[in-house]
Length: 305
Image 1 (cartoon, rainbow, N blue to C red):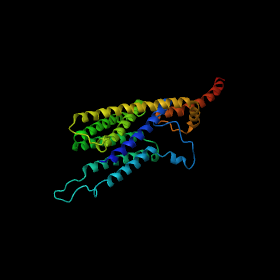
Image 2: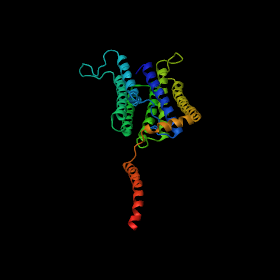
Image 3: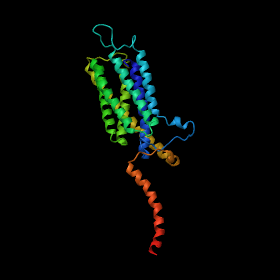
Image 4: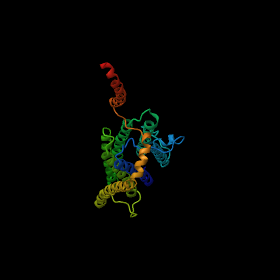
């Protein structure tokens, strides 16, 4: 990951995922839909319906993490070893092993998503969110340790990235208790966009400066403009998020009648959100009471006679 491609590719994946999540969250906000259990469902049935239900986000995490692991191993000079054979033995490639650990967390998180949505009898949202939060806790620890060997411009770039990861970790932690809160999902989407766009910017700052000249670690102006560029990224990503919401609002409101008819036709196939057991029992007992009411009404005149 210590290359230009190693920063741009993960950043681009995060930006694309953030844009996709921005569209999904905007649609859910506009139609007051559930974020975890949306009302819409695939139209096709039969052989391909089961493939459609596979967790696309989980598969994307697994594929992306696997590709990043392969790229990291291919960029290592020589064999990727953990320790040398000298006495006393020393650890080798510390940053590369940290990168592999980060990518392995992404793969494991994707496996948890696929298992929860496609293998368990009932989807476990707490398991998905808990695995994601645990992955970001470990990512934060790795990022803090990863920045210790940096200085100057590189250290400033990593500190700002650590700030984004920390804020995203707080949002994901709160989502454990409020998984359906739209405000938290909007904040999560914004932070994912910032994280992705800043990784791309970090690749240009550290490895391919636009001016053609490397940034000067001893120049205070360069250090200050790193923070300035980060603030520009925050504003641009926020405008991008609001733009997606505004375009989605305009688009869905113009096509609202047709979408509403589609939603009503597909409503029997959607998976409802899990509710407490006592509420389900009340719903089962209510039709039984309604069926017993006419029988009691008919039997009452006979009792009077």
